[in-house]
Length: 148
Ligand code: URA
Image (cartoon, rainbow, N blue to C red; front, side, top):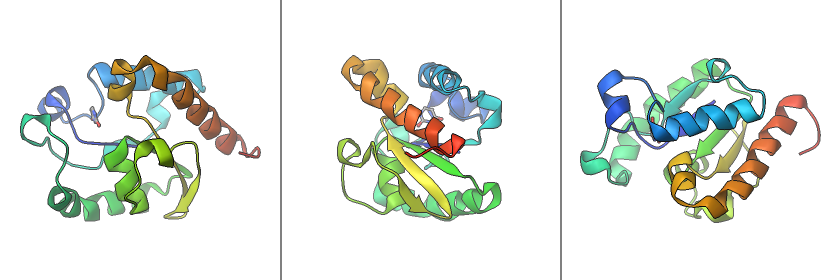
């Protein structure tokens, strides 16, 4: 399962998560670890787009959290890739930033939560691509049942 931040304009219009530029990068990232996108349940922390695409407010996250919890309960994922600070902090109930949270595995919701950088951030920050690749390889090892 992949959990992002919130739908962007394209996603809001079509009702499909991660179909814009960040979504295309996400598809390539998943392909790179032999995980076709159609084998992954992709969703967002927030269920609709915050005005002006701003960072979600805590009250908005709280309003959407029961929905996200139900999605996790129904999908029962082995691994949850939490993309970006809002997804990672929400799923881990943490105040730490994504740079500190990423690269680690957190047991939560009967799954293994792996925080990583959001693909939209990777599009703007090439230097984050290498650590993000390490996180993806970590996901692959967890899927294979090899030691993280
Ligand atoms: N960014 C997200 O976090 N989610 C989407 O669905 C699209 C872009």
